[in-house]
Image 1: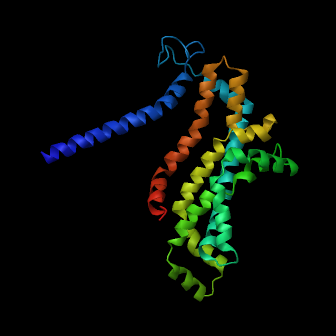
Image 2 (image 1 turned 60 degrees about the horizontal axis):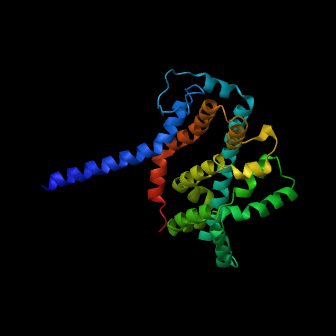
Image 3 (image 1 turned 90 degrees about the horizontal axis):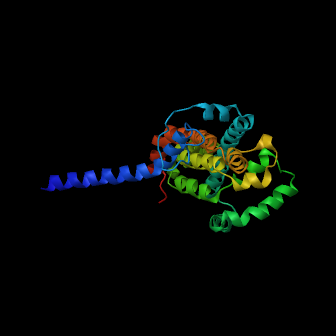
Length: 275
């Protein structure tokens, strides 16, 4: 009786997971399949999930567009640079607040944490003014620098560093290691779990960013991929099949990053949970 009840609950659990997964994946799958349809079939009534005839010309055409290809490459390079800089800054600041003692440490920590509660949209205009004054409009630096310092990432890594046994640090200092040497040889090798989490978060945040690139980038050669898709939708709204093909190609790098780091992401969440 008990075994039958457990099996029933297990099947219900699987059913709920399947429904949630299907609901989440349906828009992506439909978008990918719509890229193989003709322009007239995408929004045909009544709705048809699969095309009458599978065509690949939409994907071929969007890949041949030099602006799209360049935007994919530039966005990927920018996301990788943004990811590594975010990890470095979060790690160094977390080590300072977790392991070092300096004047006004607690005050500065509170000041940093407060920024987590300020909506990002409220900071767009002040940051835009600063970027303009620094002549960073239409530059990769203007896209990358304003967002690399994240209080949330710093706080997350700090909590992980606080759980590293102090005996390791003390032993390194006794052996003559400097503070930076301790950070480099002890803390960095142990930081893989939180680095995976904040790295993926930073990569996805940069890749999916739309408002900020639209504000500071006006030159087509620096268009980010979301910016290209937004302009394409406005200028060529009648070519829905081509738009679906472009949208599908833009999500492929994100899916690949998630699939590649999925195991490490789950492990990182387990090992670096905030305590």
